[in-house]
Amino acid sequence: MTHTVAKTSQEKSLCSKLERLEARVSAQNKELFQRAADIQGRTLSNFVVSSLVSVANQIIQENEIMVLSRKDQEIFVEALLNPPEPREKLRLAAQRYKKNMGVVSAVNR
Image 1 (cartoon, rainbow, N blue to C red):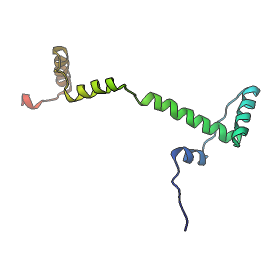
Image 2 (cartoon, one colour; image 1 turned 90 degrees about the horizontal axis):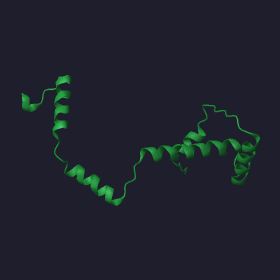
Image 3 (cartoon, rainbow, N blue to C red; image 1 turned 90 degrees about the vertical axis):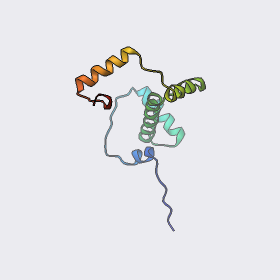
Image 4 (cartoon, one colour; image 1 turned 180 degrees about the horizontal axis):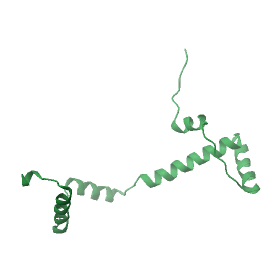
């Protein structure tokens, strides 16, 4: 009986080596990277790629996910469930938009 294990996207990206990435680094940085790779028992390439993947994912997550305090969550949900009435300036902007875009509302039919 064979067992198949689903690979994470990170594992898949490390396994499928279709692209090449080159970078010039100082001898000091290369030694630093090699030392860290040796400590983890990895090749230098594997260490660098996995480190870049990890940092890239973290940066993207930090910029795509908004974390709200409990109070901010409650304010946000309240605004969604009970939105305030639109002010006159917003109503006029919506009318201008509809006129410019040729949108006919059900009320005007």
